[in-house]
Length: 548
Image (cartoon, rainbow, N blue to C red; front, side, top):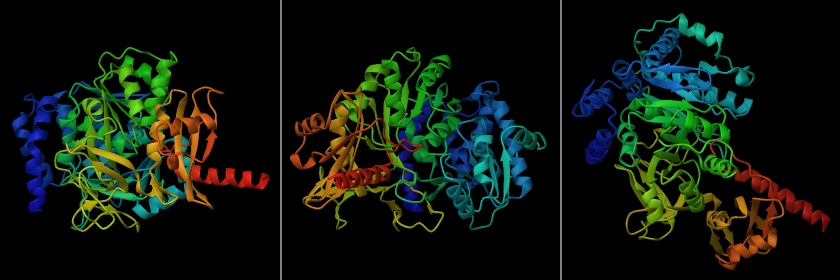
């Protein structure tokens, strides 16, 4: 605990400078000098800061717009009262301490999140793309007794034995019957975690795993550390198309909630509609995954949607690798505003690459945030020298408390976490990510990172999208297979793709198999579904062998 406190103090200077610049809590209610004391009190009382700060913003700016979706618009006073009502309803029901929601980006998702914080209940966001069996398993493992859903997803929780609250009349009745006064948090056992949330991993490498995060002791400084790298202000209007059940979208609403900014939710991502909402709401901040950013750029180039965004100051982009070519393209369209965030559900946000970093160090994910330590280690655990590629190891106040089911791995006894990524640090302390460790392909005795090949393909103007995976080969053990989406039909063929690769890569890195496809499979958090591509490659190769 002493070591943790020392790292918090060491990080506080840079973070508090960010708080002052952002103007999150001014002398209208609290002075910036009072902020550390308020946060310290929140820690002592085991309160979740963003739940407590909502009441502060409701008192400070009651009539300011807090939350907007496609159906409603709530002020801070209205949001405070509605979340008090929901928190009281949940506490009075006496549930077992966890409430789930399976919702697209709509106001009720944020209300559940905040009400849980106020009521001392652990919120459990559920991916809206999960299959019925996955949802049933998740709710059982997490011990959830109440879940809030919309009509579109109600069928997937029909077998849930607990309480299902459907958005609409049932949800509004639940709120109407409860008190708008500040709730008394539910009593907890001594061993029960408080002030946290359960975020589920994407499930790209197996079953989705629940990662428990504690926002009281471990989350304050890392969350506020964003302010040292992102020009975030209390006056911001933040548009969030990234799903709020994932870490990126969650951060995209939690930080504005804590700062008193306005949140605009995009329920279903549609590039032209998203561009229009950016203009209509004078958006200054945008939270997206890379595939969303690419589709926004495509829409602008196609003349679809507005091109007027005079207030846009920053774009958070994370969830998967941001190709340097896409960063440059977005710079030409939106200006120097993209912040490339690197992290994971378990490790939290590790580093941020600013627009200046992207120019100075193309491909970097930036320097570690204040209070976060990053090391690069070899297979023997030895710390590697500058520039050497090895496994990324993170130690941070934001590292998760552990998985909530029987999934093991990752978290070590000294509080460090291995995200499963390979990378290196340069002499200036900038972090570069080579690829996922389990995506590395050994072909003919040579190690190849598919991301390196993908970066080359993304630089080619005639290629809209591309993904590379490893497939079994009788001669080389494994070889590379590329799935390529042409920008225009007939614009290229497999030979042209190989020529592009040979111009920039060693021969053993040139894909042996190349398939031109109409699109790539992505999950809701913007990650390419590589398992699906590997299965597709196996089927294609099997069919080719059968024909031969």
